[in-house]
Image (cartoon, rainbow, N blue to C red; front, side, top):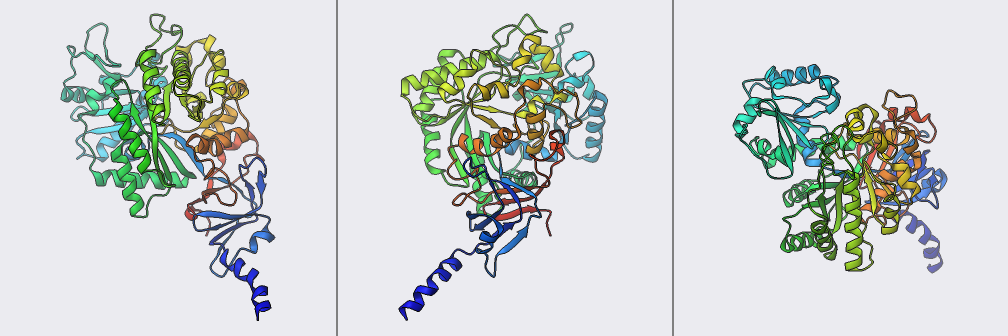
Length: 555
């Protein structure tokens, strides 16, 4: 009798390991440097329980196992968008979308059509306009909007989120006049001839009008997040790292998780600045202790150190090429930044620093180095966000200090950089969005979208631009600064394994191997096997989050 039980034990062990979902006949890039390729994957519950060839993984199937034949298609770990503003992007899905507008006339037409379709909307809100579309290189003007909507306030943010454009009605409601002054970091742009506000507001001055716009209710925010989650699932995004978080947003995500509707993992960073106190830091640290699970995590802070190059608010080491009277300004002094980073790091809060200009990047590196000296060597994983320009002298410091280069490939889309290039000037162009130079210097690249401050949420478009530095139409033929292109593997790691490392989660996700969380994406084509210029044609065929299929084009 005992011998019979011994014979049956392997069978019982096999049945106990029966998978809920099995993917067969695929070409699977695991992200695991030791075993980068496999054919099949087995999932049980929230975790991957097996990888290998079809024959081995078939042994893990049972009567209730769902088996999907990938038909040779390509699978990867789920995309992890490492810098995003998800609630803001989700709310904008119901606003006028100006993304891709090629002229002022097209913007006006979209605004007019939206206003006509929404006659009861008290405000016309929207985003996505780009600087290059306005004639003669000028910024937009309130009169451009008055020409199509005069009876209601209109407020539109640029694609990068750092500049806003309002019509006369919106300025009137906000009380912005020629006498208005803004003392913070930003500017009410005025007509040099008349002194009247043009309708353009930079950086912090945007709040003068945005504070007057209608505020969505809690349920409206939840509904918007559900729309955003659906879009993210269709694009293969299974994790996000929110760079503009709040306690309210944590609560919203908790509610979605209770409802069973949270279909991606969230890591959240809270805003920190000159006014941040020790008490604020202690509150952030308490939230880190409370939210440390696989679905919802807190424990990071984001510091805004400068603005953007297009509007000359990024802090540069030298003057702008088209504005020799300015080099931009940081939001705080080096001493203030050093103290803030030191305080946050001492509380073991991860620090993100928004730094676009080369001066801001240097200041950020100096602050990280200062914190490591004061607080002692440890695995801080400081992050510098954006890094659109940098001095060649500073590139090796990323690796030496262990600072992550957190960058957004679509911010360097050749279709959007005309104004950027004119402002930065030719001498800075060789190290514009210097992905390859940073990689050669030993930096770890982490990729993301910065949605909605960009032209697309789609990681595939980011992958395309990281590899090609070309528009999706393939122009220009040689790419924009092609020396800074990276390989397909580097780009994929930026959106998967390195993104997981960026949030201290590399032992939980970012790879397809037993024990890891079951977040995977099936693609229509193999990015390693097609002409790189066709990468943008790839589509997501299936998204698996936490072991469940949350999006599929399969029957």
